Length: 132
Image 1: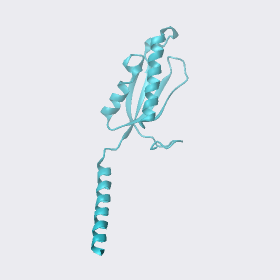
Image 2: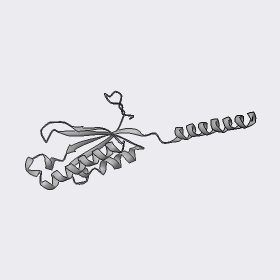
Image 3: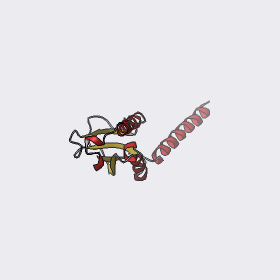
Image 4: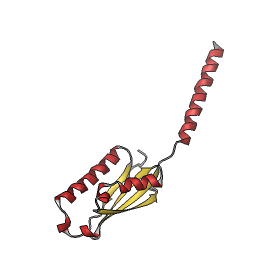
């Protein structure tokens, strides 16, 4: 009986060590920031057609989905005039290439309403815990 318990303990410990090693080898998500600016063609209020507004709603819906999927850390925009406003999206991805693809697939970017730049980023301080 003692031998059987000893074997079970060894199996349990080995399984936990293996699981810990596998967790350590998984690709850790990195943080990135994409900076959005309105394309110059969108600086005039008259450029905002119902179709363009619909695309911006799709952009916002996509950000909501990224939040629900645990990818988005924070997103928002400044409250300036159209020619000075910009938005930021801080999010997680496995690599710079993946982060760039996520940013370039934004509906507003694809439609030419906004331009995008991607930067490696690291949240140092936050009111919210970005790991949750």
